[in-house]
Image (tube, rainbow over all chains, first blue to last red; front, side):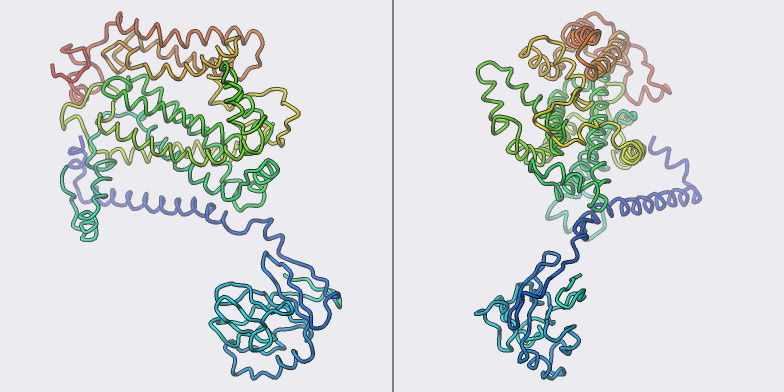
Length: 183
Length: 421
């Protein structure tokens, strides 16, 4: 039965028609499989309720000068530091051209006294020290990551160690004088 | 075992170290000889395997978003439906996939019953199939508990209470199953763990099932053995393409339910969170359990009903000996053929009775149908085998094909066994 099926359509026209069917079927199958796989992969992306939690409101009024608080935004720590005049001066007097990830302090803050940065080391994701009094602040008075020894300055910029980038600044707005919304 | 026919150096390299390419080729490929007369009823085995894969894949993605705790389970399922990207699709595939799995497997079983696929030398193959069915039932039952709706909770309560029917040890067994004194958080946790585990056990038994199949080779609509190369064609490409075609048709049926009637086979009560204080007015199992549920309720005695329900499945394991006919295929059994269809009707009647409330006339009909269920297997099947005169079997599969249709050739041997006439 198998043999007769082949010999009966042995002409070149028959072969090409069969090839066309094979390629067309395979192509439709591949596209179909891709379309079927996508919902499963996409289901692993953030769900609607996770995306809905993407903004955090912070009241800054209890944070006195020189103090810092850490808030949670999208499950990540955000450093909020009320900088002293000395710390602002340190951040602004730095020569930007010497930095690994050049950014001026003005680009990184909306109000000079408030530094707001995501507290996750850009090396491998540890949370740097330096928020609480008594914790090491590193050689540049900002933050020190205990995992692999990255030093950040008072603007959260990388100064020394393996991390490649400054601590990222999240999108935020001052909705009142002493109140911000992150995200 | 012949060598692998390939010029691909990478495949040759792999083959010399791990002969997996030729293994697959011998198992599901061009080196596996299949009877050349398999009908579409033979599509359902591979379909069942594919549905199992779909169930495991969709189940793993559901498990990524499910919380097995009485306080969170219901809401985590609702979150899958509303918030998780395509969560509704994955859940509806899984929900309806369970029904599809039973539809496919029940057809597969009835095909085996009609064509005598349980007869020598396929008894172990048949038993492994029954083990697969029992594992499927356990897995489906525990999966239905996970959303923690009203039907989940009360289904779990009723089914676990079946074991309380056993004298002396019954209550201890039920307490053990529950991990407490009622269906509660420990029950839900263990059901989730087992619901995740059992499908992989199923895969293992399916591999044994296929292994046993490859030993005896496929049965076929004529019920006679392949007697030579003329009776066989290679599984690939002939049956791979036929199975793929059947898969396409089946997926249209499956996806119709997923997209247009996703809750048709479910119960609305399961969208009410579980409440241990209130039992729903009309509690019914999923459709695929209904015939067995009808048998359970046919007996006005607690232990008797439970035993009879288990016996309804266990009796199938004895079919290789209860069926005394030497002829496998019902196509050549003029009497059995009719009783096969009568049994199929009986099974549907039992399913219908299982869905009806426990009142007259359903109780009496259910008792008659239950009696007939066992009468068919234990009395009719052995007797028909003795008294029936089978129609003559064709000399071979290819001989039947030459005649244009599956009409028997002149009688040479009506034993249906392998010896040549």
